[in-house]
Image (cartoon, rainbow, N blue to C red; front, side, top):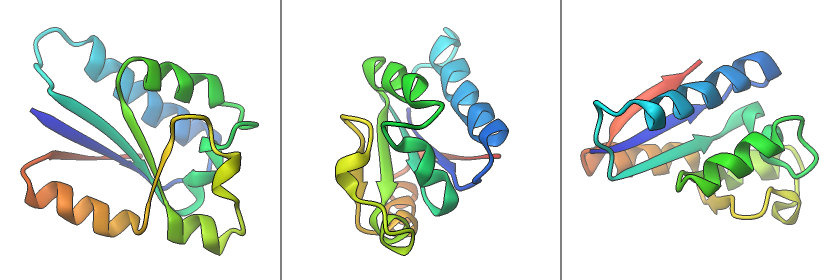
Length: 113
């Protein structure tokens, strides 16, 4: 099964909750996943920066094979340079566009917080 988690919240506790949900899925041996993607848009993109208080958690998920992606539109709106993202985080043109494509291709969708 392919899974996409969607986070848009701009508060650290909610982003930490979202990251924990991704980790919990990875740790659940009763669920077979082919791919897991964590997609951020809105204010959540700031937590995918190298200086974020959760950057180490993002790096850990990347190391576990999770695809972390952020919305270019959200970066642009916040005047954030993609070069400041945690290494390995990918940029997609539109977060909502990415979600639509993933859902259309059969990905399980989870909105975290």
